[in-house]
Image (cartoon, rainbow, N blue to C red; front, top):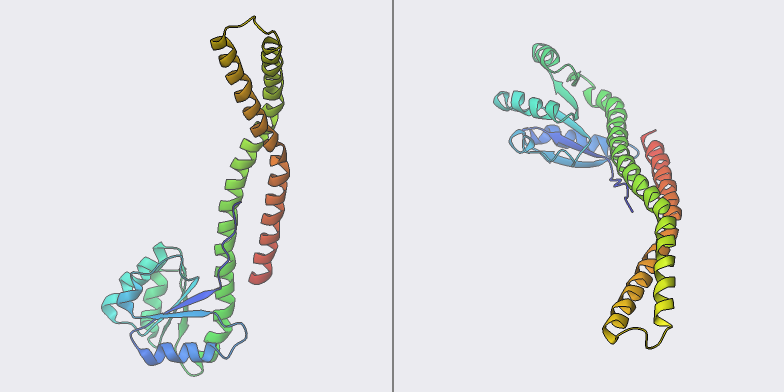
Length: 229
């Protein structure tokens, strides 16, 4: 059965200033439902795994790595919060990457960040899980189409198999009318038909299994909405 992969929300903190990263994680860990954290430098951050986090917080990185880093995050469609003390730099980032959320690093910036980060993280988390649900629903739709086709064909195939089994049994009931070779071939036909019949019998539970799969997907959708709310 296709399952939804629900992982704990994770924030990627990208900075070349260790104190900056520690300040954010230390303050965030004081909040309720703090996420998991991954702390990396700007060099390492450019090789990030897109599936490894939902929100990136970027600040105090070297100028030569800033543009490539933000560009790679934007291309990957990740949610990003960028902090800087420089209003000119903030404006440049806004002009080039309008989807990035900007915060000026001024007095009480950590408190402001803690107002923004949880909401941004869980919104990104919910969007990632909704995308996963859409992928699963697409897979289930293909499986359901195949399942319905098999269920429809099962009755037709069973009728054909009944005719094959009935005729082969009638032939085998007439002793001496068949050569040993012909009898062996008819027995093979009968035995193969019985095996196919057994396989088709197992398909009778397919519709029930599809219903259970849809119910499970619905429960997981409710769980994602609850976590993201």
